[in-house]
Amino acid sequence: MSPKSYPLVFAEGSKVAPGDNIGNAKRIIAGKGCYVRGSSVYASVVGTLTLSPQKDGDKKLHEASIILEKGRQYASSQVLTIGSKVLCKVLRIVTNMATVEIVAAEEIGSLREHHSGIIRKEDVRVGVTEEVQIFESFRPGDVVIAKIISLGDSRRYYCSTAENELGVIRAISSTSGEVMAPISWKEMQCPKTNAKELRKCAKPKE
Image (tube, rainbow, N blue to C red):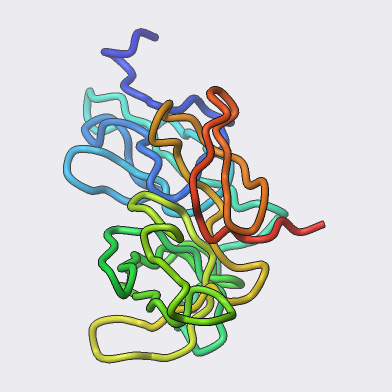
């Protein structure tokens, strides 16, 4: 099908991550692991995109769902607790903290209702807080694995990336638009230009 008749950004079977634009909400129905914002359907979890044909009268639609990685299942419970590992998307950064949108949680999967969270300067990594620079740790659009350390106030959770396995797991190069790969705990590199950018990277699991 042509892009006009079937406006998908990602093909079925593609690997997607939180924030990826899947397609036009007029033709795509948001299923498990997806949500609608504005005129588009977005992924809210890491996994594989699946599409199921649907009909609305004479209109042909497709329902987009995401199969979670490693055989994980979506759970009915949506309760976040202290110690929960969560998947976040960085929305904005200021001098002392990063504001994130929590889209999924370990053992729960995609959250029906997204939550707001913050990663404070002192919770970015282990070490001297004065040496931490938020803009060298995160950028808007980054996908981050964090841990909830406090229920915070009524509006947002406090999260931490201080442990080695916590931090940025997906970031886009500001020079090429390519997905970068971590080369150390504090740097990621563009595979196309070899340009390096600072991040607080999550240590890959061996």
